[in-house]
Length: 82
Image (cartoon, one colour):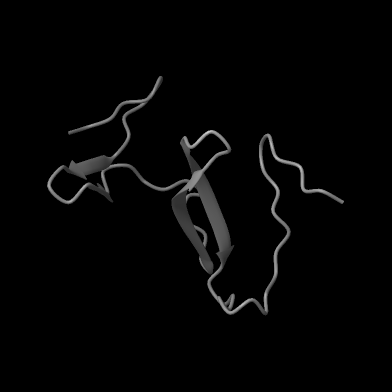
């Protein structure tokens, strides 16, 4: 399967059995396409009405996942309470 954008093709392939996407390498990454030292994850979180909302989490690859590297949450449509 190939996905297309408004002005150019996207180079991703879908593995329907595994439910994963893979970069086909057919389109070169831009200067900010895959920065070294960052990890990006997308998870689903439940909203107040039970609907699952995708949440993108981007963090340094060196971050410890033990609570010692706290990060304030910011995002579109979200303002942390002061």
